[in-house]
Image (cartoon, rainbow, N blue to C red; front, side):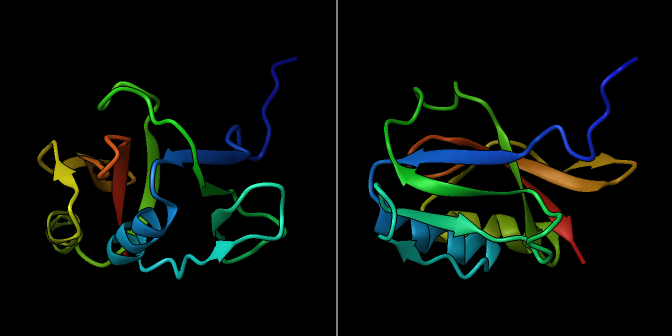
Length: 125
């Protein structure tokens, strides 16, 4: 039998060199309301799903990002039109690395955050 979970992705971690700066960048791009949480063994800032009992989430943490654009790509939802999101990326210090890409499920583009992490941003209504 083939394994088919509800979500193959169960959690994401995005390493950043400056957590406060990364929180500012990702809040500007995604409007996620990220806040630094110092309650665990390491500080982090969580992307929280609408439904915490069934959504896939992730976090930013102080760590060593892969070489510029060479690590895995995490795809994140961003509110509104994709073109507006890409403008927020530029204004917040990130780099847009692709034109919008259309798929049957929606549109997205590749960006790099200020640490060089490869991120896909998906247009959401």
